[in-house]
Image (cartoon, rainbow, N blue to C red):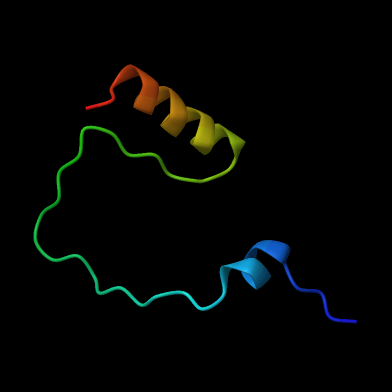
Length: 50
């Protein structure tokens, strides 16, 4: 029996992305996709939909 994370098994092959170059600016940055990060992102999307 293999121990495979269900999220990884469903994700399949991840696309490769190049590194960012230059300077990026953002009004908000949410780090993490746990319940706290998702809740923060959801609340920000509701309060600041633009």
